[in-house]
Amino acid sequence: MATPNPDKAFPVSWDQFHRDARALAWRLAGQGPFRAIVCITRGGLVPAAIVTREIGIRLIETVCIASYHDYQNQGQLQVIKTIAPDLLADRGEGILVVDDLVDTGKTAKVVRDMLPKAHIATVYAKPQGRPLVDTFVTEVSQDTWIYFPWDMGYTFQPPIRDGA
Ligand SMILES: O=P(O)(O)OC[C@H]1O[C@H](OP(=O)(O)OP(=O)(O)O)[C@H](O)[C@@H]1O
Ligand SMILES: O=c1[nH]c(=O)c2nc[nH]c2[nH]1
Ligand SMILES: [Mg+2]
Image (tube, rainbow, N blue to C red; front, side, top):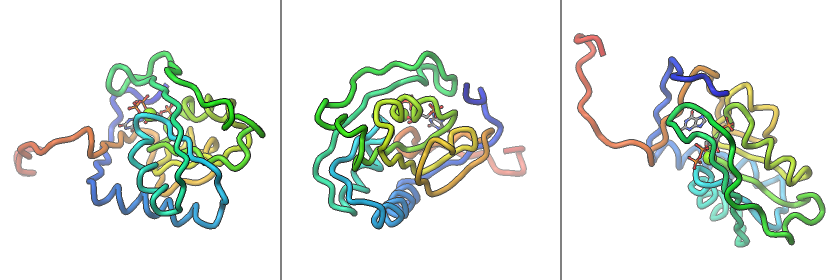
């Protein structure tokens, strides 16, 4: 289970996310060829859009998995939609799997079991899940919560002198 209410915050802006997803594409560019991408929804949809544009993949599939039903607390993992049979052939050889992050590694493990030979890539990784991914860009500590730009809005920030 992910650390409930992690101590540290790692907020990511759209600009930063675009830069980091492009850095992931640079790392993946020499590792193909990939015949298709499978993105783990919903978080994997945004990096998949950027990576497929950069490395020229047009065949895009989803595997729909949810486990954080209650904000930062992980519950039962649900596979809502699985992968098309033609992409499951060859145990996932030549398939690129993309997600926004790996935390405990439970989500990545489920996809690894479906596609043992696929290349799994995430933009961010925490130590517990890191062994499950082949390529990532930035590691943060296990007690950090990553705040993605699609989950945030602008709010007033109290001055530091008031104990922010
Ligand atoms: O390594 P884990 O501990 O399994 O956690 C990582 C997963 O958790 C989040 O998805 P979430 O289940 O919140 O669904 P979402 O992508 O639809 O937001 C994130 O997008 C990863 O897919
Ligand atoms: O937005 C998120 N930030 C995280 O750090 C995280 N870990 C699992 N699922 C997560 N979702
Ligand atoms: Mg997800």
